Length: 487
Ligand SMILES: [Zn+2]
Image 1 (cartoon, helix red, strand yellow):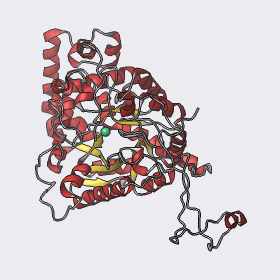
Image 2 (cartoon, protein in one colour):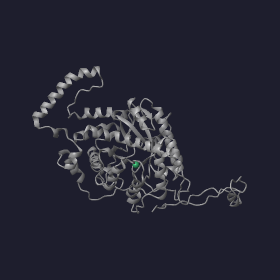
Image 3 (cartoon, protein in one colour):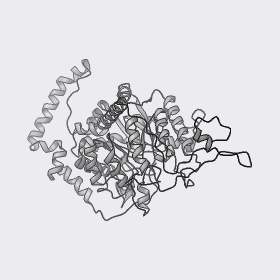
Image 4 (cartoon, helix red, strand yellow):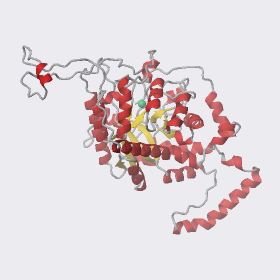
């Protein structure tokens, strides 16, 4: 789900629009190094006609050959952006970092898939169904198993439905994927994504959108990993036992960054091979995590703060750190993050402005796509639903981004990052690193009863007598917000 926080407005002017135009014109040295506009390589009409003639001649020769050897493709007119986009998406899986369809399954169907009126294999309202997913040539999708922050939970020890509901969302997402084997394939590894793509299916992965969804428990991180979740967004729109959320800072509170337990969570997620997601966290939390992460990290659905001054976006220093980290920033389509000053006018070109800025500071090895379809109320013009991903690719080509750069953007970067995380996790585990057992400060524990078969003398000596009602479930301690910041 996208934020409910008020956008942070500043007078950023039209800097990003200027940047877009320099990228097209090639008049900015740095942008010129980043993007190659096909037409900028020709010398006027004569050479343009020559290249069309050559392309046409080759097409006449190679088209029959391509019928015999399907691997051979006839050359393309470089300005045939739609066909170029189609070829890219046929050869490289487009992997979207964030889609909230499981939330729709929860709120509209109450997670009842088998007797519902919603046939996902037909065109529905909203942003997502399987028909449009196929039209959009989506090769891989991280489905978000989001549930809300519990506003009534004032202390970490307060009972809440959050972890239960998260388990239900993992369950319904897996059942949804298994219910549509013609379209979807459940995946927990990057190699599975490539296999699924070859089979013509959308690889389906699970991402958890907020540390609140594991109840501030590192043991729970291990268990949701075992259940198949492959990324956790460290916060959603509330602080949790791990760190400060962007929404907290947007509301005028101090940016305390990553909490002490957050450092332990990062260590354990690295050991496990759980992808760490920095979308939704505060800018200081981003910096703190990047200072200690031992693997690449991702932003599953965020933009660039210099282009859209909303605290959900990554500032320039973080983008530079991401280059060092080797991670990937998956550009989001959320209007108010794209254009905080005039979200209603956001279009596919604003997404590209964010992508170009991220690539400018962090490199083309650092960019990805994280739409937030089905989790945002309004989508940008030209990217109205999941069928429209090819529009983004065409518009990138029109603006001079190369086929190779786009292949990195749509999926190769994410697959590389995920593969590195997997590899490093294997290394940490093989080197004997133990699972982390840290907990938040003030964690309470059951004290036991007088008649328990104690293992330790000290336990027997501190046993708790039953109270007047015969109860002995004494819980001591209440972890409270804000958690302790590590120095
Ligand atoms: Zn979100």
